[in-house]
Length: 169
Image (cartoon, rainbow, N blue to C red):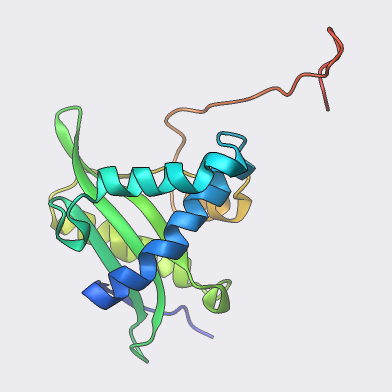
């Protein structure tokens, strides 16, 4: 089976409205899993971040929201949110959110979508593509590494035991 090809189509308003709730939930869940937020506060914090980053929704300047489609069938296979922003003396395309729908995972759509996003970023004048990946998301980390992404900073954590001198793990 050959690798799929994809298109990045600007989200419609209906697609945007359908995308926001699960993406907000995903951000909340990832931050809880990473130990950054409590379950009680996570949903409100995620909603707040979306409100700050997308104050005008789909029309927010510099924010590019795409539906990832299988080029052959035209069917939606995921979504990607890219922000164009300055980085040092250049322009960076930063991927805020990237989702391949569960039923399409493991089929090459993630790789195809990231390659298409990099090409779109290049067309828009970006010198690089950046993203954040949670440490617990090993599948995504492996994909990004295989595409040539390299860590630019790493935040690490050591869980401490309740008794002094006994680190957990």
